[in-house]
Image (cartoon, rainbow, N blue to C red; front, top):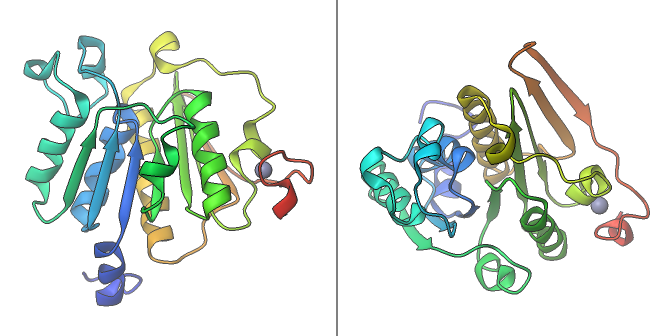
Length: 231
Ligand SMILES: [Zn+2]
């Protein structure tokens, strides 16, 4: 690797990392190839979904011939073909409060590729409790956002817990490049965290229609029910 920020020590860190990807839809398809090609050691894919026709417009790991097949099975096969050195486990389950500890306990980082509040809340609470960093991402319409939570950073609950549930991209639609932009940004935040850099506490938002991109420092809420006691 030519980048001085990575070097052979950084490559070793990536090799020793285990990433838990929750959701292998548009965002996962956009972020995971970068992590696999960068040489992370282990990847756990969690998603109960099967490949369906509307997915093909933005979920780049799948093809028409995959329709009806388990997303994690197909994604694992495609990602293994990109880098056979990565150990990949396919788990066709939804992440829940009941199973988060059994899948999250041995990982280095959690990557959010869902588009729902419930699993994000579960990942966030687990991350704050266990110290495992979580990289959140979301895209709907032409807009997207991403941010990381690690160590003492303001958590997802501080930033979004009080907001009403947003539209999902299945309901509202999403433009493919918005998903690609967020996925690439999430992969970048994940790589930096795995290399030991601090990138949390900052929310990145972008609107690919108006082409306005912003960076906002998040504030921790002292009374946050998840991380409040720790801040
Ligand atoms: Zn919080």
